[in-house]
Length: 189
Image 1 (cartoon, rainbow, N blue to C red):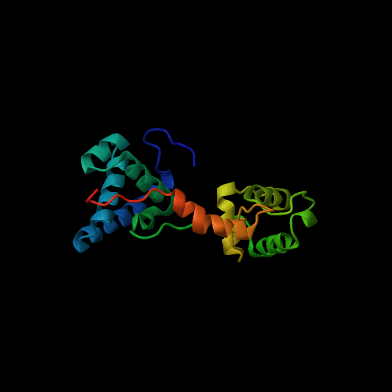
Image 2: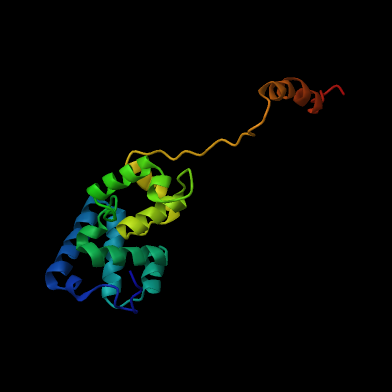
């Protein structure tokens, strides 16, 4: 969403008489029920609609400017219902169900079957395959959430030396490490 000019954060369709009446009813209901959050949000939107700047509304209601901007964005998008308490609506998934199934099959087949030289999937590789196959971009940090949603778990390889001797490692842990650790001093020393 791009930044709006001062006084234009609420579109004209949200300034109709019926929308303002719904906002008034929501404010009155919130006040009667003691819902301070919704009451503050409606007061903030009314202040902005009435000509106050975001900074002035925030100062008057003793909240942050970012809160007021969020309220205005919610009201612009959903009307009075956007100011209700509760979880905000999640954005629509970028891949539909059939695309997610196809992605799952691609991941099951492995990176080499997809024409990649790597022997294991990484977030960057999965994001690149999604971009190439479906034309949708995913940030590398969002890939694990997507993988979890389609039934995969993110796994990281353990780093082990290929030629390590397990017996020598056990001896080192049991004998050498305790010998080199500092002994605790007692209060008597």
